[in-house]
Image (cartoon, rainbow, N blue to C red; front, side, top):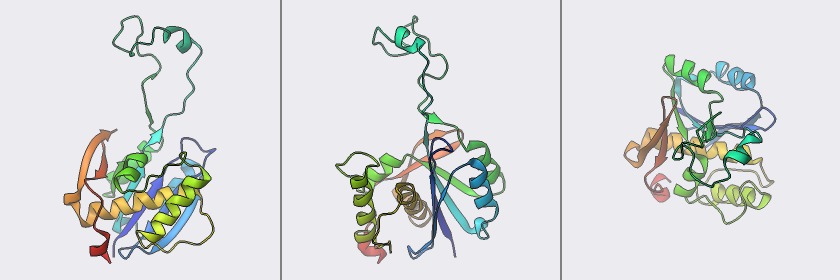
Length: 208
């Protein structure tokens, strides 16, 4: 039996990273919160069925604060790198962080399949996006209800942490990539990892 692992990576150890393990019948085997990279390494190194698992890890938004010089040089409101007076210094245009990439690369060298995904694009593709503010309590409750009612995932009645729900989205994408690869598209690459998304929302009635 294959297992599908979704990982919702946080930007730093001060925020919780969600992990979800799902089997082929959409049964959740485990959901948990991790914080540091060492926590993530410990989890995967001690997961007994890792070689039978497909992993989807979300891209991490780079939340590095720009220094005060940006306010001065960015004043003309022109695109960085199109104006020779505004060179791209210190990763001003870097949208995603490389957090965890080195460890993921070591896993791929061991034969473990790892793909990346852009969380909000995947939520939109799976019709799991809401009209509420991102990661607000209302958005969290909406996502939990949608996963329970539309996807038939057995979730508790009380509100779950948003990071765990986002990890479940990654697990669903990992399963779709394994079971129905024709419905998967590669939208970009990031540090030699494929960034994947669904072409269209899967037919849920056919899966039940």
